[in-house]
Image (tube, rainbow, N blue to C red; front, side):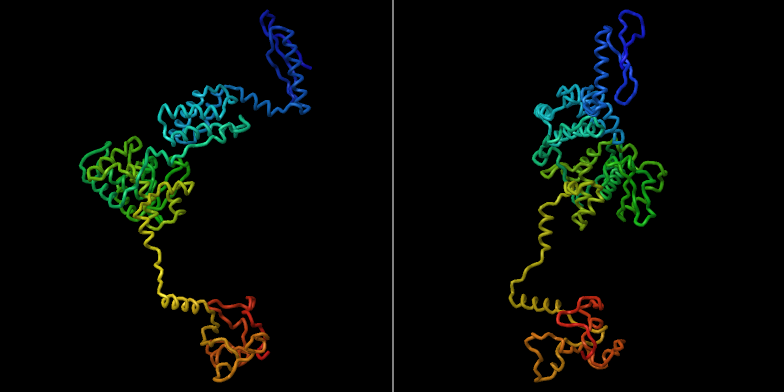
Length: 476
């Protein structure tokens, strides 16, 4: 039974309500200053507890309804805290885009989120800010991630962003990259080494090492910036480098093999480097695209052409994956070396031009139309496919009826309608079996599975027997 009381005798002090909820726990709730209204609230709370106990009210649905009506700012703060395992850049971009949509649509609580309102706002934002298709999709992905998290944490029953279509990024490429050819990469290294100037506080030799390491490993800029002397194991077989999970884009520790030429150079680079000292200090804050641009233009290679730009990411990672494919690596191998979760992402980094297609096409075998040549080829194939029976390396004969090797003698049972049980098959001539190290039961060996080899694969007694023969004793 619910009870009401006052904690103070002051006139404007509200009443308090005590009642037992559906879990059997005693709860105290603040009421009103008016006794009558407080009694009505107490009766309502007590009645709802009885309905929950009887199953007429679902407590889970009530909890969801309460969450949906709570301020959305509380959920955004909790969502941001759940992203702390990711890189700071990812957290910043995700939360900036999510909050921009929430504020632009005027959402006050979770129950206000509707996909149509998000679509309308994003269309206006795209038009006013000239957003590319890829950036537009990134905004939707950030909002969808927040809604997925709300479903996973039981704040929402369903994701209201499901079914909101993305734009086709292939028809609106704002930052197209191209891979450099090996000759262009060699010129880039030579340009950096012989420049005699510093760019972004890095000497020409440091830039050349940076370009070479990026191309030979395919590592991203942030991953290269995290490398120390401890990251390399030059004595392993094969030598490896390790990217720690905290520095990897997918937050997983990666151990990669290294090119032999890079291993030789690293032995020189790491001589005076302390164990925990970084190979390229302060690289994370450098404008690597500016380095590549100036070093390329110095040797007459355009930074941007009709195929795209050749920034640091393109000159290193894109060129690395493209050359892997050009030089015989399979797609699964390239995917693992690039550390992609989806092989379709690996294909985006593979730049195969018309020249590569022409070289692949030239490797197709040429078809000959000479009838005489075709006839000879078919005859050779028939001989190769024909099985022969031999006996443990001893000289054998073709399978034929007894006496068929004598001139003028007709073959028995020419129609073949009575089987071959009556025709004994001679595999080897007298004296040949002993030469091969086999002890026969008699000089005249009948066709048995234990002495037959088809091609180069011996038949065991359990193997299916050749058609038309059956195992038996000599003379049967």
